[in-house]
Image (cartoon, rainbow, N blue to C red; front, side):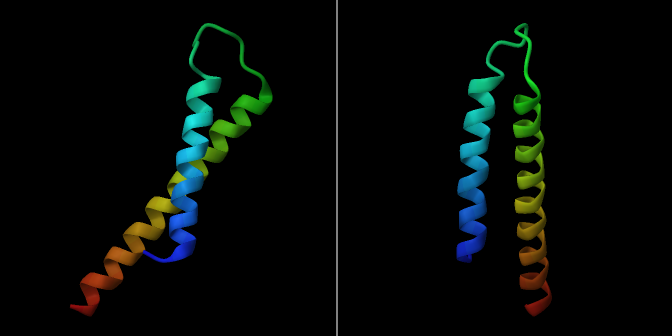
Length: 63
């Protein structure tokens, strides 16, 4: 795993922890900042998965 992917994985873990803390009570009203943080987490997760699948595809083609 390359360093940028490792850094992205660490960012996703931190964002998911922040989301868990922000959304622990589903009945409390959430601010726009909470929703933006959740959207950022989703985008970072999609980027991480996309990079992982791309790397897996390159490995399979090489073999």
